[in-house]
Length: 240
Image 1 (cartoon, rainbow, N blue to C red):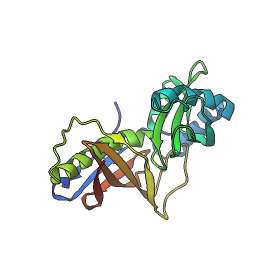
Image 2: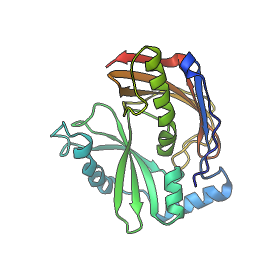
Image 3: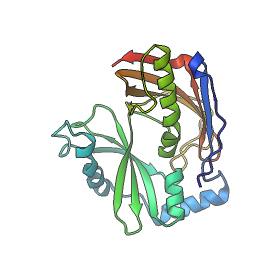
Image 4: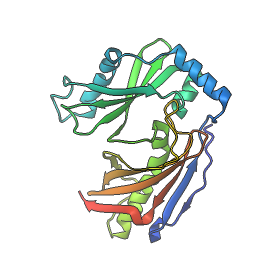
């Protein structure tokens, strides 16, 4: 069972703030970091030549309206371990995966924004990929998974305050994220996550014929997760 500590307070309906704290599966402990390093050493970072075909397999599905995309250029700008991300950590511990990496790319024939993928290496050495986000972000994959439901609630609440009929069952699309601020206390990346410090990002959600730009304030909790705050007065709505 996922060990998630939740402290949920919300007054978004009246223009307040939504707050949530998520705890990860691994603590910032020397023995854990030693284990992470051992896993990373056992399954070192793949080369660009190994990564490119794994990413390319996804392009036709991700960009069906761009025929030139599937055969277009893939520029790999950065590759770093994602071993401490909750999903990768648990999967490696259970011997379902060998390791995982975050891969930042440019796809000139597909997307005007940078695109980040997560590459996972299975026990037989084969690799598969998922897209984490478009745009720039400090948040890691499991933090996206934890935070998106809260961002969706904030978007729906903002739309309802404007009189927009938007169901809680609406499927929102996440647009290109951007980093709005970095705290001076923000720690360096450690196996794909940040163990301390704070930062803020803007996540655009598109749904119900509107775009909702949501400012999300993150504070790393030292345990692989982050405390998350969405100020109600920093949610901007525009007609799509």
